[in-house]
Image 1 (spheres, rainbow, N blue to C red):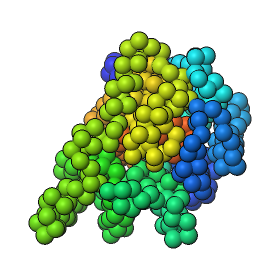
Image 2 (cartoon, rainbow, N blue to C red):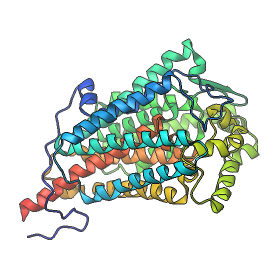
Image 3 (tube, rainbow, N blue to C red):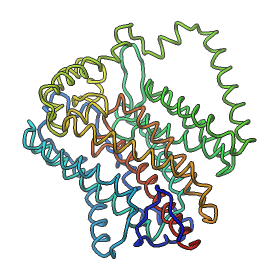
Image 4 (cartoon, one colour):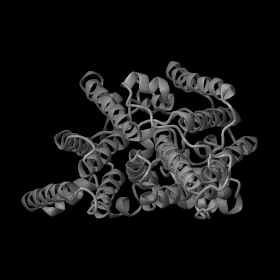
Length: 465
């Protein structure tokens, strides 16, 4: 019998994965894989200053909160029912080794309830965290027997983002305060408010469309149009982290794409060069100083260096964590202890709930250094597994489903974007926030496609031996 490479699961219980399902209409796709319903959020038509002046470390309820929880609960109950009727399956050990980290992370969050200043809030968010984890796990179990068309997963994630963008545009003239802010020195910023996270959905549209254009996954005209929509939608947010992260991801996409779709790559590079030239012309006409001031929303040097006051919050949090390595308590802790400090900055006035404006610092605040370590290891292992399989995809040429390779490549780019924006956004680690759902759906796509590739590769070695 042939010896398996060290990175292939060696367990004999692994069975060949089913052939990928045919492409499904949108509604049937959502019914078949309901985890994608969570990418909608769902939209909440609630003013962003709803909780201004409240102690958000304590429980507050309204109809929209009930809708959000009910939305997740409904999908989680369905997942539990499906898991209870499933026969025992074996997930490759590479994927299992990753799944233990969000589970242990959840246990740390649960322990933090005991010392949280708002135990009810922390306990509620722990329940929501585990409910989503059940949905996440059910998706991985389901694709074992019924794998989707992985490219369709990406396209439908983009389609959901387009629908939400259209909803923001529809809401804007009717009730502009729901989706935009007027900030002194920055002017109008269309952030999407509680309807949808503009700084996430628009870059998702742009990245998936750019990848599709370069790899000819759809007509180039459509891909180019959606790419422009994504870029145009990112600019009104005036979120520097989103703009910089999107630029870096697109540069990375160009850098790693020359070997595939050379003609598309040349067209993409030519378009990017033209865009840079036009941008240079604008800077030369308007003036570099004015453009730089606009990019920084009119802030002085101190505001730029401190990232709009964020670094002060991070410094105080790190100092606190040196003597309290267990953190402050899941969600509620940082809202109580650092809500006042955050409210002194512009970003505190935008979210009105307090926090760190940093997904990594938020994890540290929630459950301490060990939680941050688990979170970083999980993300690193997800990226490492996806990258390893992409590099070695030539080993599974007999397997016809090449869509998994493209899905992992594109999802890795999306994940890199999320990790970059996470430096100034806590939503990626905060249940009930759209950023939390979408980042974890991206991870689910990477792990799901990786599962299919690992099992297919395992089957190939069994057959050849």
